[in-house]
Image 1 (cartoon, helix red, strand yellow):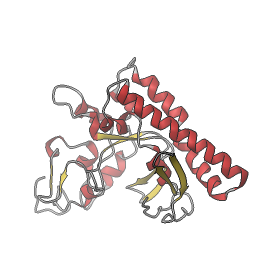
Image 2 (cartoon, one colour; image 1 turned 45 degrees about the vertical axis):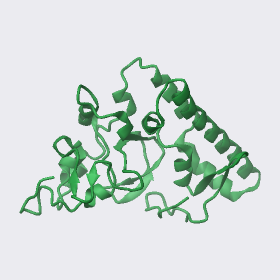
Image 3 (cartoon, one colour; image 1 turned 90 degrees about the vertical axis):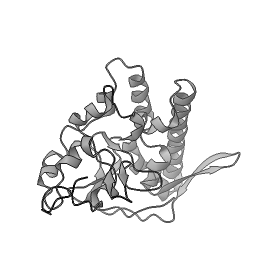
Image 4 (cartoon, helix red, strand yellow; image 1 turned 60 degrees about the horizontal axis):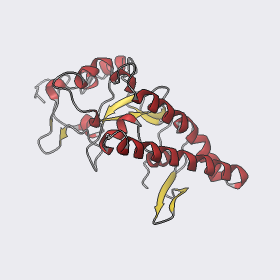
Length: 244
């Protein structure tokens, strides 16, 4: 990052934007993952249609209307993978993604203008005919994030509808785990790449809707309501932070 004496332009090295997570990626960012100096796809996480996501411009959390890719957060942190908090510097500054280049500390108009445009997707980074395209499509069909909000609400309500919801969620968890195991055992794709190819796992998707996925030693897993979660208000309002 470079310093500037003009606080309205350039980077002030405050780290505020970097600490909030990695940027969403756009079509022009595809070049970062192609060619001789390509960054590995393990640095990306796919957020699929229907997942609740914070809109940095509107300041709300709402379901995604289409897929998006983001640079991952550092392990155990919300900060961007490339951000060094000690030196307040970016390890990718000379090649930083489009959103990072567009953002000015005191003027977000350039970022707002391009924020929802030309979002990069997994298909943009997998050539036509790539054998995993069909695998990704099947996984999306069996584990659709668009269903989870409705199923979570039914599960909390209980009764016959709650039991039906639990059974469907259980099938989704089993399918997601089967796909991840197959990527590792059959395709030889390490787990660090799974967030790109398959998106966030079911534990993360359930947590976003107030459900916790607990592994039981020797007996599989169970799905339960997260006692630390509070229900979301009207659509398009902030969702409280949750922990599992």
